[in-house]
Image (cartoon, rainbow, N blue to C red):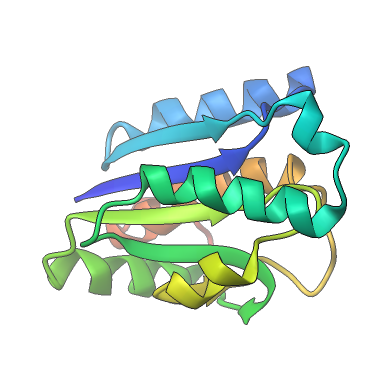
Length: 157
């Protein structure tokens, strides 16, 4: 199985870049993991929010395969504990899923056309975080999830 994280725009803060790199390296011990970054032209960023989300959606569609299990990270999604998230990952692996694609939208969220195509909607918290910061939180939770599945000591109950 392969896990792909699609994100809108580059991560700009060095502390986030370093943290994401750290967990991406650690994940190599468990799973094939990669990130895909969609960079929108400045001309799109000057448009109304809904038009920006539609332009992002068109680019997201280009990265998806028909058999992907798409998980949108959205504030209205289901919340898991870390253990429940590890169980979610395990279910996808044993189901024969070839690619799980997690999507972190841009600063204005995810277009409804993509949310409708998603297989699952996941919320990382009731709190609101920047779309860049959630990337680090997601990578850490993904690593934690696999360490739980491997019964390693990173996660302390």
